[in-house]
Image 1 (tube, rainbow, N blue to C red):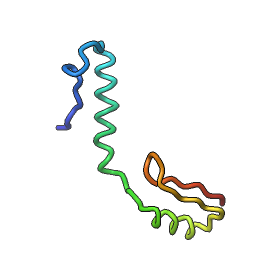
Image 2: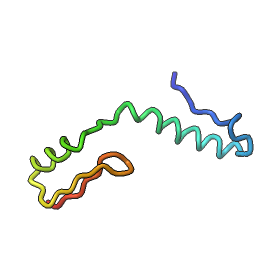
Image 3: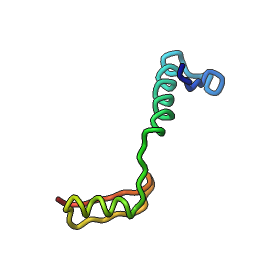
Image 4: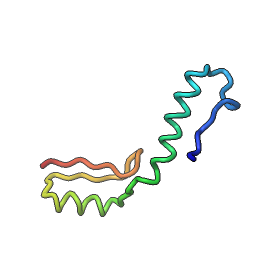
Length: 71
């Protein structure tokens, strides 16, 4: 069994197709967090260094740690 996100009571104005689409998307989004491999700023900097990247910039951004680099 898998939990399904349900918005029937929260958004009664949505039609059946919209409710189904939202349920699929949000259920997927909530279940994929288990598979995320979060890294710290320092860990990402080390990975980029080991990959021989140059001109690397790593910072804390709106979506967590963000990085830009050149190979």
